[in-house]
Image (cartoon, rainbow, N blue to C red; front, side, top):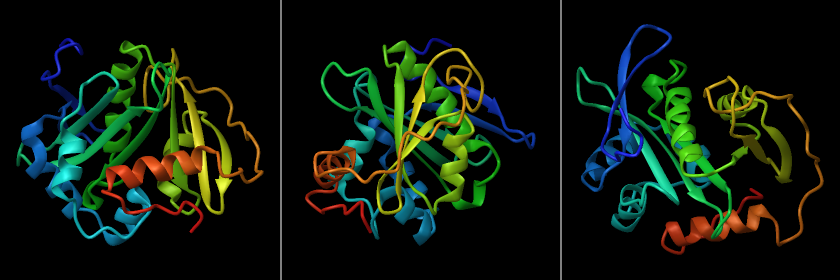
Length: 221
């Protein structure tokens, strides 16, 4: 399989022996993305979107599925036996010419703790490195223990942005963890001082507000 081919799928064996298929997302996957959202509990939706979101709007579905596979990428996991969509991971370049991308992942609750998120992030990080990215940043709530563990396992440095919000920085390179291309390193604390209004928290809120058609995201809640 060539990762340059945006349609190429990859079969993955999970740690419990189940098999899934991971492939880049495509514009025709909007209904599958709706299914993934429907498989998230209210709590999982809040942790992923930092707000109480009842559904994905048409504009959001376009944004999430119609990516350029370079500055933006998204991969989707499918259960080959049923065709069910199990989860999605995506990255987006933080700014023009930046070698850093923000990463996010969501897996339907029925498939939690089976390695789907790690497998999605492994594929996504390999594609990101091929596109010249050097690091991922992930913004999660401190009470989202699964996400904290997921990004902490690869040695991502972390810092507190505001209130319960943490930012992990994961350097891409040779190593282990949820990706052969994510370096483990040590679990470093990058500081706990809350940022001023010009920090990543504000940048994330503005980006999410555009993505969510003007609905503001308050990182401090």
